[in-house]
Amino acid sequence: MKREMKIAVLAASLLLVGLFVVSGCDKCCMGGHEKHREMAVDTMQKVCPVSGRPINTEYWTEYKGQKVYFCGPGCKAEFEKNPEKYESKLPQFMK
Image (cartoon, rainbow, N blue to C red; front, side, top):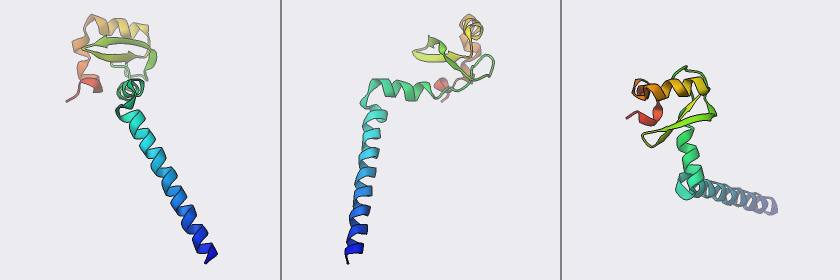
């Protein structure tokens, strides 16, 4: 009986820890903190809309209220000349 009680206590403890972790992420990443909300949105874009290479978060511009990231300064400049040309390649603007 002691062994079964220990297993039950351990299982209940693990369940409580799991619930605590999940509820903490929910408050933090699903709207509790502005910083984490922005991070979740920003990470949708993985590639540069101009070159198709991975983004570097140091190079970005704001377009229609959304951050758009690029692989480097040349692509940022190219995008800013004609942003509409690249809009369809951005997950931020897909419907």
